[in-house]
Amino acid sequence: MILKVGITGGIGSGKSTVAKIFEVLGIPVYYADDAAKKLMNKDIALKEKIEKAFGKDTYDNGILNRPYLSTLVFNNPEKLELLNSIVHPATIADADKWMQRQTTPYVLKEAALIFESGSNKKLDKVIGVFTSAEQRIQRVMQRDNISEEAIKARMSKQMDEDEKMRLCDYVINNDERELVIPQVLKIHELLLKKAEGLKQKA
Image (cartoon, rainbow, N blue to C red; front, top):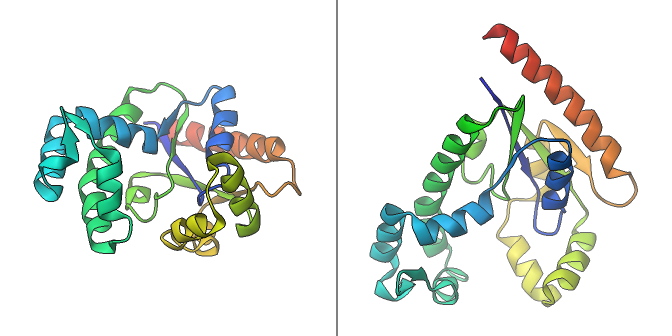
């Protein structure tokens, strides 16, 4: 049995950067957002469901018409929920298969919507990456070259950050007041011990 660990945080929290530190330690990471993008182009059953729900214009020569789909769902909570209800189960199933193939003591699944999608139910532990809203806005403005209003609109669609961190088993502060690597190393050691305990029980 492999220990399954999630890593999550709001937009601009730096969860992907933190996940990459775990990768340096030899822990494989499943990036849910990247995987979902691939699945939406390659998984035939998923493509059929998306096309049925959002119409023929969703795909152009078999490739997802991302700008078109974005305009449909961005300001429409019902349509966004519908899209998530189609894509999340496919991504969760794909992550499950991927995790079973790994041979390390534990694996990581990096995803923004771990609790919202219900994928936390299939995980043993969840790590939260916390950064203040002000810092997250600054980071995303620099990274994506978009306005503060656009970022706040995205943030308003995500779970409250404090609530999300309360649901996590471990929290890494990525607010530049604390060094990140020592925090990662501490959690890494704890997870290796937990994985060892799980192995002994099995």
